[in-house]
Length: 111
Length: 116
Image 1: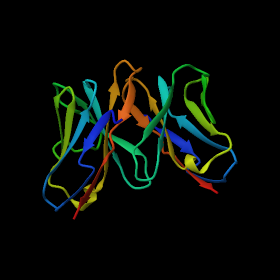
Image 2 (image 1 turned 180 degrees about the vertical axis):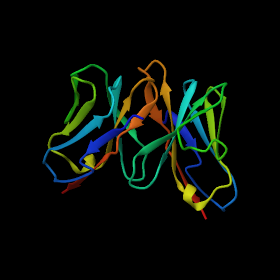
Image 3 (image 1 turned 90 degrees about the horizontal axis):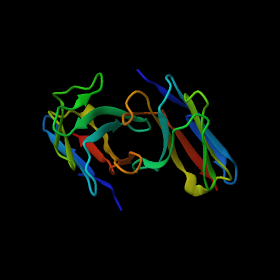
Image 4 (image 1 turned 30 degrees about the vertical axis):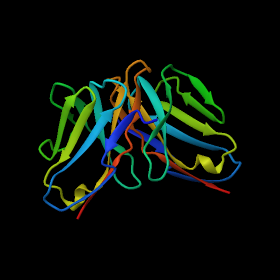
């Protein structure tokens, strides 16, 4: 079945440093979504990418969907302590609504 | 405010008993809802797709008779963990795509199940 891997698994950064998490799917995706989950909380939708090569920005967050629609990345510029949490990518393959979650990247920001 | 509501948020039950978790879409109709399970420090694993008016579709390796799913209406899906065992202790979370929002998927707050 479809597998979605993320690297790194964990990342500790000093506040103000940049952070990037990479997402790779074993199969071509129809779209990819990114979620943030704070400790003890539920995943919160951040963004959805649909087009090959698409790049979207949300303030300090930049999301990219690969040309082959098999990989994606999330880049945070100048991290803040509020960025702490686990970031998951989630891809849809054959079925538009059924998503497979990536393994997640846990971000820790050191003040 | 919450778009998808889940109840209860935390439940403790004894081994051998059954527990029901509810997932409601608050301001939209959801013909499809998804149930996930998340173990500590792990990702979300899709358990089943709940379909209003028909049987749920279970992922490989998920026991249908143990995790009963009923999509009773267009705004309610329930997950019943039957004959619960300690290894069923986990975080269960539902989600639903919201029509008209590009099918953006919204998650419930999740339910922590502890089986003692």
